[in-house]
Length: 635
Image (cartoon, rainbow, N blue to C red; front, top):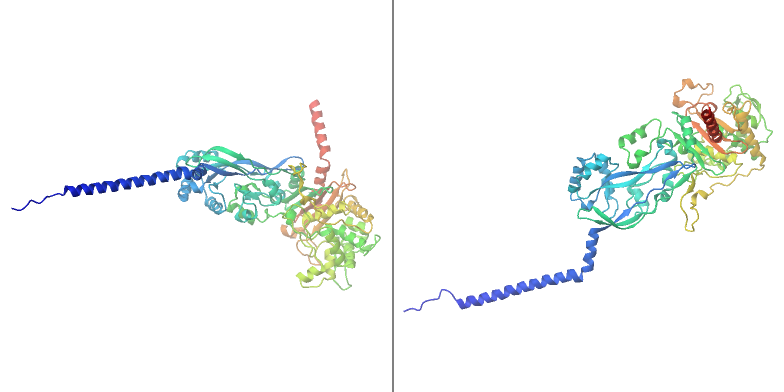
């Protein structure tokens, strides 16, 4: 009988179970040991590191941009202000999907393609982690409300408040002050990027550009605590920024606006200077444009409209307009002739109405067809006799004329703090050879002697040269800055080095009496019986020294007479005037150019007279008004 076979080996199963249990226990113990070890490592050994990382996720460093310095006129009137504005910004690191978020925001507020392009450019610029990047500027209260109620589903979206530039007088001062605009990649590479953290604007033109370092200030920093969505809960620590310095300019707002009103709709420029300090009292170029849209970004359509406008409102005529100086340089040409010894003070010329270099040569016509008869230098300046200057110009030749004109600043940039100033063109023998490939001809000298031909100048250069005459040869470079707020390291009032430079040497003549002769001749222009601007000086309570000029725009044939009615408006002559007052002790120098306005005596001189009155008689006019008001109140 066979022995029965056991279906299970209980002994073996117990051994297998015990082995598996021990193995499982060992694995569990090992895993627990590893977990505990890891916890000890993270919580004890790496405690400081992870606490720091946690704080960095909760505590952020944010740049605090400084407030831009303000700009005032010489009387304390605010010319450039800062106004609050709210921007729609995104923090890239906290936005899960940029495109989707921007699309969602577009349903809440108006966001243009230009806004998105600008946002992408700013996003690609160098910046700090978790730094907000503006998407849309100048939100309305309604826009802010729409975005605010949707914050819960828009992670990384925030509304930031900042102060942005505002120009209360708009186009009246744009060519004098310039403006600020959004900073671009090239400009960001030229500045201290750390100092410009959080700053979205930078000076683009004029005073705003030249004094950018002083106006901007120094950036601050703050530590803020944020929640899981990145919203700021509280400011933990703050290092306040240093605001930019306030600037006070020599600009006189009332004089500036008066000049603008006098030019009206005409194209032209006015520059007024203080001969004692070189301060720029007025700098007007018409037409102008409103700089405020440029601050946060002007639309392409509006900008093209300004660019393509036939009157060129973007063009700064006062600093970059290049015009033939015409007869306004005749006093300097006359001074060059007598100081160089070419002719004496008693030199006289018979003016029949024309001048010839040779008997069979070309006729160089005087503006007065019948001529002025026998004239000396004083008569020639007062009556603007072309033939007299043809004669001395032919006798001198180019070299003395170019030399003396250069001493008065023509062909050079002599302003201290206007980066857009242009040097224009002062011709010389070498210049013509190098540029035109031709020799200098006697006829070229005749043209230069009356401010025509190759020479071109800017209104600023004309005003500066006239200021040198008013100061009897003493050079003071034109400047905008009068004062700057703040103190230096020693606690003294802050002074910038640049405005104290002297770019040109004083002019020393062989006889100081020549300055007096020149001044008396320019007074004859305004107050003499035959002076070209005697009507503009009529009944003036003070003496004015001046010189008119009429610059041709198109050539007139020798046998033809100028007839403005037959010419298109833009082909008519430019009217020019330069002068200073009071003549014996100058307080203001003025240069006026009216494009296509006709003669200087009819178009430009009356503008100058009104400006002289406004500046010199302002206090007496105010007193008269106050007396009238008092008398009216008493009655």
